[in-house]
Image: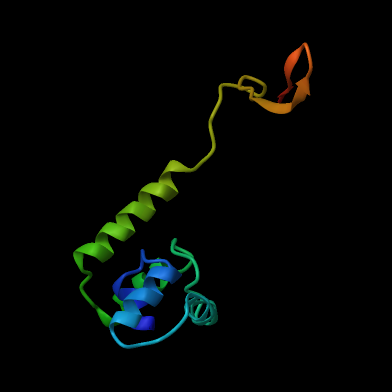
Length: 116
C-alpha cells in the first residue's frame, strides 16, 4: 500500500483502495487513510505524500515516472498560486462579502453586504 502511495501520489484513498483491490489487496478507503495517517501520508501536498516522495527520491536516488512528475508540478503550481496580495499602502485594497438573508413577501430577496 505504501508503494502505491509513492507510485501514484495523486490518487485519493477511494481510488487507491480500488486500484489495490485490482491487485488482490483488499483494504477499505478508511483503512487506506488509517495507514496513510500512521506514516504521515494523508495529505497530497508537500506536507504529505509528495514530501515523502521527494525524501525517498533524495535518499534512494530513484527516478520519478511521468505521472509522479506531473503530480509534483500540479502541486507546485497550486502552492505558488496561493499567497498574499501586495498593495501600495494599508487600506488601499478592500473586500466585500454579500450574504443572502432571506425573502420578504412583496419586497423580494434581502442581502447583507459587509466591507473590510
